[in-house]
Image (cartoon, rainbow, N blue to C red; front, side, top):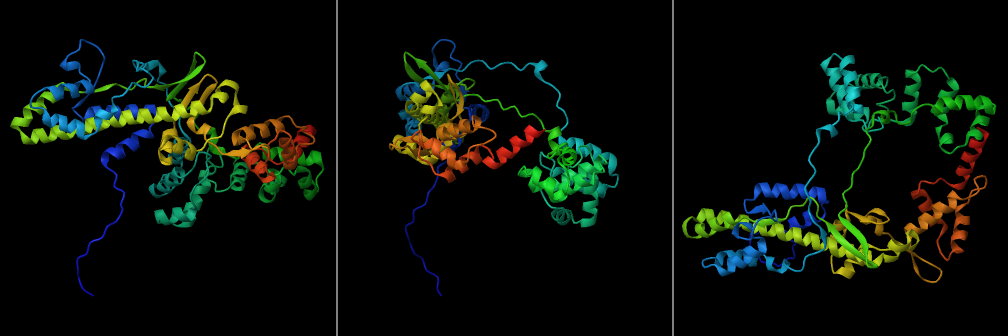
Length: 478
């Protein structure tokens, strides 16, 4: 073995900071982008909000005007070099159609309401009144902190014992007490354990119901009630009485304290029909228009002659400001191109409805627009399009296609909707099997395999025909 020097060429992807910034901005929603813009405004002295008011002058110049001014003034060659080195001049094309920014609504104090306690707050409050030993309280808080929204424990008691270095017997003892808290059953590991804990808490002395929970839950999941009654040797009225006890228990005890999650969506794109043409507008409400601060422009010119450290700082900040504005503009143009392609492709859907939705994939649109598939993925992530027929996430328009009898492409989403309607309109006493659905779809020139129907039905959370029939018969008997 010996030490030696050698050279070799390798290909390595190196992402410049500006590219990283552009990628980051591309996947943000409008609300997230607002926060990033205001953060950048607070950190970079070169950036300021263009209010669009007042007479034209140096103090109100936009970025493009600053560039023109910088090319005319003497002694500003360094400034020109910074601007053109960023490639910024390529981004002053025609304006994209947008809804302009408007004043943000003032926060009204009457809209601020109190928050009710969460499941974890409620359980911790009970723990503080139950466990007075600091060691036990620590274990209880750790158990409660690892419950999900349904109230189930997401890690095993053995893992808790290992992490806290406590005896497994003590952990189980405390967990048993937590299961008796309100709501009862929280801290359980399985559905069976949660239901039995609720029976213990309510002091329900129904041994048949306990046996159903302990040994026969799979029968209830499959709606095999009649068969289960025969196995238990009970008449139907007697079995139904015990079954009601089980049905009145809560399979998700923690949901009682779950918060209602209202998700408010701000559309990134508006689609409107003007003069029989579909137009795309980008929503820039709440996004400030940025410009370069002329005061720092003057400081930079003065610093070029006097202070090298100031010059270096201002040059660096100006580069960052230009790249930030360029990234914002690039984000806007990319989103517009993708939205415009979607609208052009889906004109029939916008005019006539879901039956005319055409299939699209990320690869297809990436190829058509000359972009990378990952770029399209970032564009459609968490973005919404407002149309006359409703609000749609951009991901709604991307799904696979199947072939019709004559070779035409049919959207998988459209097929799911047809399957859903067929099942909604079926004879409940004699529901459609997957094979029968295949036959009905083939009459509409849709060629699809039985296993594909089963997959789509599962994605729609629709049970198989035999379970649908059993549920219907049980409802009729009741």
